[in-house]
Amino acid sequence: MLNLPLFFEDSFKLPALLKPPTNLSGEMAAFIMLMSFGTLSLLEFAFPRQKLPASHLRLSYKTNISLFIFNSSAMSLVSISSLFLLAHQYSDQGLYRYLENNTGVQLTYGLQAVLSFLLLDLLLYLWHRACHHFDWLWMFHKVHHNDPVLNVSTAFRVHFLELLITNILKAGLIIILGINETIVLSNEIIITLFIMFHHTNISFYGESLLGRVIIVPALHHVHHSIERNEHDSNYGAVLAIWDRLFGTMKELKTVVTGIKGNSPQDFTRLLMFGFTMEAAKPVQTPANLEVMIAEAAYYKAEKRNFHPGNELLDWLEAKREIFKLVYGDKYVYKNSQAQLS
Image (cartoon, rainbow, N blue to C red):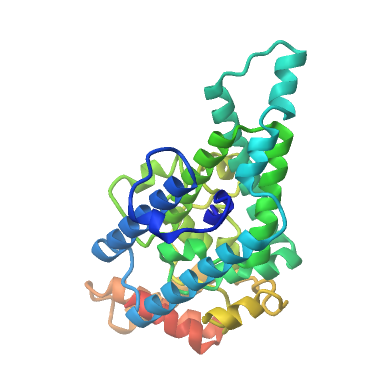
């Protein structure tokens, strides 16, 4: 995820966001991100995928924006070089220059841009997958997953230490390859736009077809499912090819998002929550959950002598009851009710 202050040599200057910059720079990145965030937010309100409780949505926006501001301020004070400055320093070194100098292979600017993007996207896929499979990484990453109302601002719901490690990994890739600073900035803009996009609470015509190539909201919604056997999937940041290649792609509909059990939703306690092993890995949901729901729906239909017209209602009511039975948690149950209504 793009951390805007990393691209400012001095500090984050808000007035610069009020007018479009004229060249590719940190200010232009900030301007693009701001405009994109506003546009996706408007689309969420105009064409929502799910009707989300207004109070939950307001709290989500407040918490996520607070985390973004905190992370941006903290990262600007960390005594490590920014990605942009690293790229400027090492752009004439690294693997790209080695290949050109020692093998005679001439890598055009366009080829370097494509290779850098693919390798960065693969790095983020592997890192994201690791965050789900190691308890000490999930400890930080669960902060991102505990948002019960998925929306565009959820893209910025990231614990500071996870963001720091992510940028260290990116810095390593920049140094190893010797990526040009303009390519670094362009990739950060593209990837952050896609991360905001696939968290957005929207649906649109052709989404399923587009999901064969990139991660779309429908796919990432599954990734935020409360069910362990669903959320351990669809790790991609931009391209869907990595999930399909490594067998982690799941295309299905999910109902409840977030993590199992009660967890803090305010900024201060959420920061501390990232340092606890509480709910470090959600409990595996019964593999036959859908069968349980189907059986419950069948008995409801049987009670009304299978009179047609209420099949969907039977299914939704059965799903509410099974979720309540399985999770036994008022918070999760209320959340499922809100999203199913």
